[in-house]
Structure formats: C-alpha cells, structure tokens
Image (cartoon, rainbow, N blue to C red; front, side, top):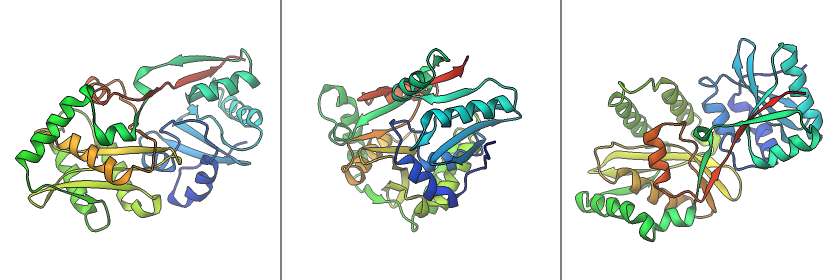
Length: 295
C-alpha cells in the first residue's frame, strides 16, 4: 500500500529529481506549489519507486496526480487505482494535460473518462512579449506603465532577498486588510509566509517596486524547467495605477529573460482574475482535465 505524507522542505531533493521528468507545463508540478498549498489543498506526497505521487483531500475523499518520474508509468497508475479502491472510492486523477491523457489512454484504453473546467487551465505567456509589451494588444499596459512612471518618478525595482522580505509581508498583510470582505485569504497568507520562511531553500526568485522608499508591489515564483518559470504570487494596491503592470514587466526584464515562457497559473473561474490574465494575451492556454476511472 502507498504511504503518503505531508510535504516538508526536506522532501525537496527527491521531489525535484522526479519533477525533472515531468512532461507538462502544468503549474502544479513544482515543489514550491506542492509545499506552499499543502494545508489549503490537503496535499500529501508519496515516493513510489522513482515516481512522485500526489494525493489531495481527506476522509477517504481523494484525488491523485499523474505519476511524475521515470519507470513503469502503467504500474504507477495501477498503484493509484489500488490505493483509491482501498478507500472504496472511485480513482480520480487531477490536472491531466494532453500528453498525460495520451499516456493514460495508451495503457488504459477506454478505462477513463475526462472532464474539463476552464477555471483550472493555466495561462502561459511569452517572456519576450511580457518584457517588451509591443504592439496594439499591449497598448493599454504601456499606457498604465507610462502613467505610473510619470506619477512616481522616484520608483525603483529591487530583487527580493532576506533584507526586504518583511516589507513584502507587510504589504501583503495590508492588501488582505483592504480585501477582507471579499473572501477568506488566510490560506493564501499562510502559503506566502511559508514561501518567505523557506525562500532560499526553495530557490525562489522575486522582485519588488518601491515608491518614496516604500514597497508598493512584489512578485515571486520558481523555476519549472529550463524553458518555463511559474509565478506564484503578485500583489500591489489596486488604487495605484500601473503598479501591477510595472512589477510584471520589470520582474520579467530583470529575472526571467533566460526562460521562454512564464506560467501565471489559473483564474479559478474568478471573473476579475480571468479578465486580468486574458488582458496579457497568453501564448498558450494549457488545458487540464480530471480523469475518472471507469474500468
């Protein structure tokens, strides 16, 4: 039987070794994402041979990841099916992209059905286009940045490090206070604090914008692969025009130019978030589905 546990920072080395073989740009498959949101999504992980297996949920109501690693993929999926059946539940695999759907269908023909939800698809952008913001499609973004620089001539960009982390925590805390009537952001703030507490060990990269010496925007994320970076967090006051576009552009220019793409994660079906992500004209819209075992 598989043995699952909550991820800790000590798991990073073996998990990263498995993630080297990931065949997808899925934002979920980074160690940072698994660790930071483990409380919110009730994430547990298991090392099966040379595979990483993830399980989400509680009380015998679980969903699984596709097996990530090297070796016998069919055997690893069979282990997932067996684990689910031990709880007398239907095996369900979450976050299945097209590459993994083909693998599942190859080894388990006509055994899985698939369901899509646009809210959980990933927005993936060209780093070059995000840095340059050229053309009519980005006219509005350039205007916002121009106005920001005009209204805040003393703005500066900094790389995020141990010396300015506490200022970013304070900014995020203030942002939550201004949005406390919208929804519960406690899980997000816990994820942010975990990220900052383990910032160097996680290998995260981030940046911030100052105005009059005060931090007014920050962002951070991590390497997914040689081609892809995943942005996990980005916060700025909505009332400061251009704050989001400028932290986005400056971070891309200063920190991401060695990558081809940046994954800015899902919109979760939230209208405002969807509009914001679509406004940057994604290069790829990564479809992910839920695979339910019917065999």
